[in-house]
Length: 82
Image (cartoon, rainbow, N blue to C red; front, side):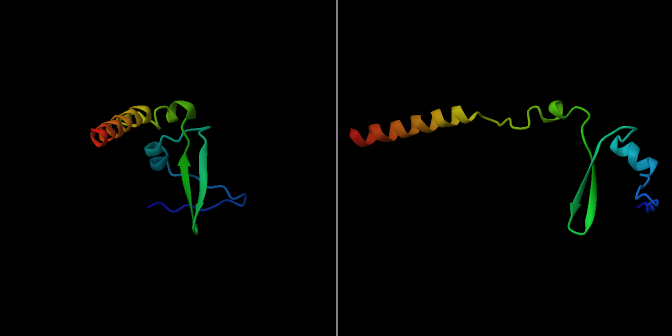
């Protein structure tokens, strides 16, 4: 695990092997997140909209699930009224 020093301006150099593994190049935006008593550095996607595309997709749609639930309820109601 690499250890780095901060400069007088608080800057650090991320070791080359880590930059390559994470795809961090010049100009890449990074998210710095404070977690408890340490910091996480997370590379942000180059195209955030494309990176989020499809994130909310489910196996089935909510509308399909609601229609199926309504069919089951209707079947139960029919059995009760017969």
